[in-house]
Length: 81
Image 1 (tube, rainbow, N blue to C red):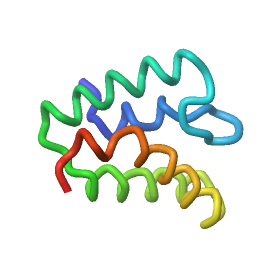
Image 2 (spheres, rainbow, N blue to C red):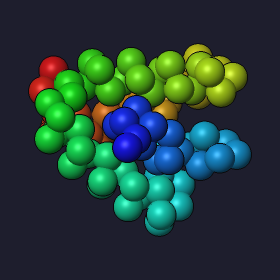
Image 3 (tube, rainbow, N blue to C red):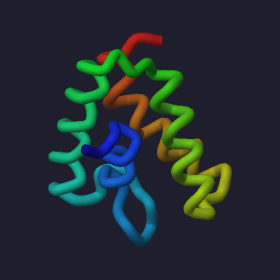
């Protein structure tokens, strides 16, 4: 069984590493949010995981911050701090 961190990677496209670029990415994001809530994942945990994921993919700091902002707008209201 995959972890929620593994599910996170599927929410970003494979080329530009943009959050929910395609409709399938959006469906995966909804699944990730439901799983994160069920597993009591906090916003801090999720944002740290995004940073780690995108850093490992060689993304710039500017790209990482922009994508964390995109995720934050959609997920943070639903997660504990």
